[in-house]
Amino acid sequence: MSTTTFQKRQKEMKRMEKQKMKAERRANRKVTKAEGEPQEEELRVMTGPPPLDFDLRQFDKDLEQELNEQQVKP
Image (tube, rainbow, N blue to C red):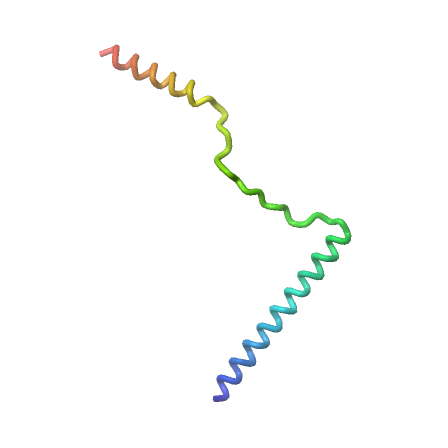
């Protein structure tokens, strides 16, 4: 029975410590915001892959031309 009480007490202490740390982080954010220091970099949502550096249509034409040349040479 005493181990249960001990575990409950430990759990409660951990919860209180977590709340304390959270409050400190909030206070730090408030101070840095008031001082005008930059916050963490904001994440951007990426909607798709980055644009390619070359034109795929030209790549397809070149590939098709190569294949045609290989078929003609037998």
